[in-house]
Length: 123
Image (cartoon, rainbow, N blue to C red; front, top):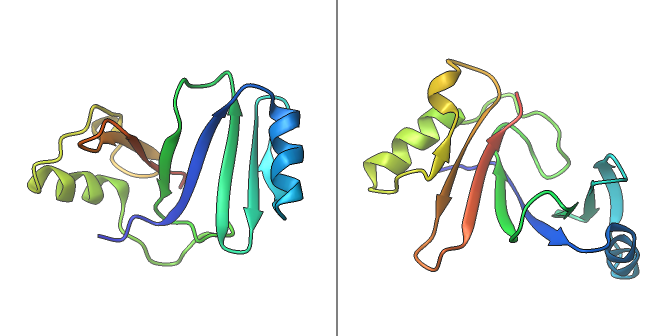
């Protein structure tokens, strides 16, 4: 299963303090609105910092994107990924896949330890 670009989405208390901390580790901003969230990159490693948007950290995969958030010519659509998860007995806890026949969509699953995994397609 090719899930696309991987990042960790961190629920942070102070966006500026978190940005400054990760900058010291070599991360540079590559996206975000600067007030509620930032996307940082260090080489091929991506971290999203999100203040006040969700309660816990989330493992995030973006079908259709590489680690630079560049669109891939070929990728497995999020609807197919959800079908593959369903066939493996992994049911989504949230999904808008059925609402859209193509384009942006997402679904959420949890691992056996309760960690949230977001499969979020942007195109």
